Length: 278
Image (cartoon, rainbow, N blue to C red; front, side, top):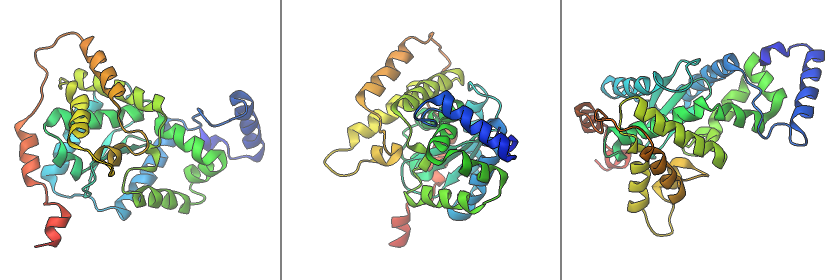
């Protein structure tokens, strides 16, 4: 808990312990943020993102995404955070999460999904990153103890502003999405289980990845790369998801689509490039 490191002696002792415990690379796989720290940072990130990004305010869209997020959050493997969703007015096919349970969904992702289970699969994957504390681990790795202490205690509010600015300047793909392959694999697995436990077709995540892989071609940047930045899904990840799904107990009540999802897709604002040509 970073707020406990407010005395110089405590800070030095804690830092020494972390270095000894982690070996030559003290923050490679280390999370120095506790749940309350994550909540504090998540709120700071959310406030900055609300100022810097254009958020969708149409309640027909935002209420649906929030309801779907809560459906998944209620059955996820981590319940000590309050999950919340925001819809970003960006055509990039993407979603990302920050520590503290905040999930951001681009309208480009909602538009690209073929059905509700595909959209839920991506949201479930992002919830998986929160469950696995992957964002907290990446913050610890990228910024270290001293900067995180300043962020959590609010002694240097410009740090959060700078990080969010970088996050959004790279196309809202999220600075924290530079996860390891192990993190991505765990988020995939948690996402698949999340869908199944919520009564949604767990094939949604793998189907969405397969759709993008099939539709994209050539040497240009793909929608898939836009979505998951440094670790786009591979055939191996899709096969692992399929193998996991095959081992799940059969259920006859799994939902793939809903009328509400179709209604939300129908009221999405037109792509920005279309609005600019009108």
